[in-house]
Structure formats: C-alpha cells, structure tokens
Image 1 (cartoon, rainbow, N blue to C red):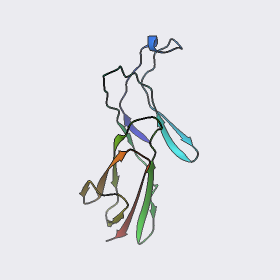
Image 2: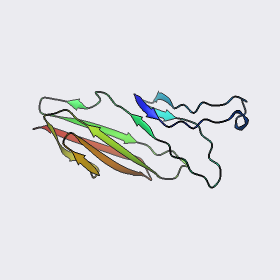
Image 3: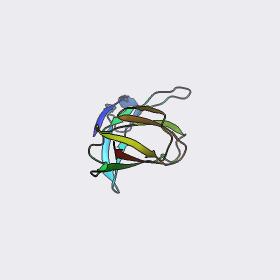
Length: 130
C-alpha cells in the first residue's frame, strides 16, 4: 500500500477540464503489477522532487528455512533515468544471503538498494534462517 507521496497540485488553468488537480497519487493494478501515477506541471528549466513510499506487505515467500522476494521496477518510456531507492525490512531471525543487485546500505534487519533506472531493473533477494 502507498504509505506517502509528495503532492504537486496543478492549477485549473493548466488543465483542459478547467478543474484543479489535487496532486494525489493513484495506485492501480495492471497486468498483475502495481502501478503508481500522478500528474504535475514542470516548467522549462525547473525541477521538482517526487517521492513515493510503498509498503509491500507479506509479498516475500517465507519457509521455515528462509525467504525470497523479487521486485521489478520498470522505467517509463520517454522519461530520463531516475534514481530509485528500495529498502527491504525483514523479521528477526533471518539474514540476507543473496541479492541480485549490490547493497547500498545494510543494517541488522534491513538493506537498501540504489537503482539507476536507465532501464527496467529486477531485484531478487534471498534470506536464510540464522
């Protein structure tokens, strides 16, 4: 579920419908994947920061011996590469034993991965019981 997202409201005079957009982020399912979408205006020469925090509950496959999780982050066509940070948290009693991408930062029960979204990225991790 979406935990938080930056909001960039759009005034009515920018939109054909003549109503302002509140800057909310939409979460949908499409072809078996969760997708996020929002709308914002970016004037030439300007920049804004868009942050979305999503909590994926119980999507790791856990057994008595360990767990496995796979996440695919897809680059939107026509958009420049974007930095994406993925942070995974796991329960006590498990240790990260394999990751398909380099770990950028690690703690006892979490690891963060820095993705440069020049193309679609797949992250697979495996945990083992300690």
